[in-house]
Length: 330
Image 1 (cartoon, helix red, strand yellow):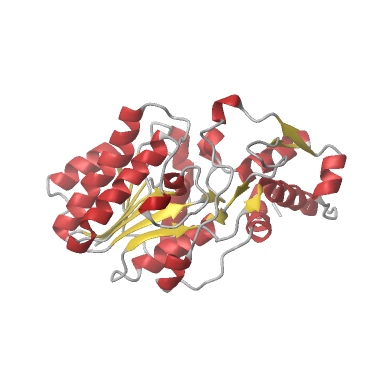
Image 2 (cartoon, rainbow, N blue to C red):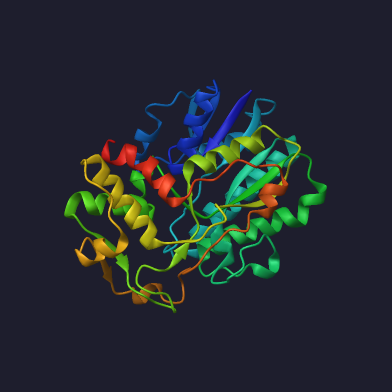
């Protein structure tokens, strides 16, 4: 029996494949779109049974090729570019593809664990898995929101586990291919390494310079939560996956710079010192993002805790320091 990971060469998907390997799982079908060829590097140190293009996989699934051969599908594949405005592409890639997988999984009674997103909440201030709190600001968020509604409508008739994870701001290893959509931690490491400086958005929407706040969650914790539910097929639902703590972008910048300083044998410095020395700079907030940007997110993780996940979740200081091990060779 196989475990299928879609988006397997991507950021979260490849971390899941590696974590499954560490548990002794190698009967893994990796599904992705390698049009962006260099993504393959995320799978070089992983052991898989097969690689299948995302379009071919869906066709084979519908043709019965995998009947009684799949144990679970971990669906991470999606277009995650919040600046993508082609709604037809976004809905086909994110919504319809996920719906097709869900239909098959329910028909065959196979668990489906899928990636939703905190983008479903839009510009609100309450981040609870509740329809009244959800109002996406872009078509990416809408594509995730709409599938969550399908799960809600069909939840009581489900034949197998279905779990949606509303990922907040995920950072960590294997995101180097994501370009502008890579985490701020990734960009901060690279900016500091290349220029000795880190750039943050200036104040906007009532927030001070670098003070926009997000719930930053380590991919290490994201993987642990996915595997927790994979091991418990009796648990279903839609769950926020963040730390439950909003922290400013300034905290990420300070953590990234200090990880680099530690690698160089230098002591840590405070935000105030880094700003005074010009290491952290603030740039004007982009006009194109005004009205479409989440200046604040903080996951309400009470539902996740109620489902039995009790492990601590890494703070920005802890998680970015761990990430720095790979980024700056600590």
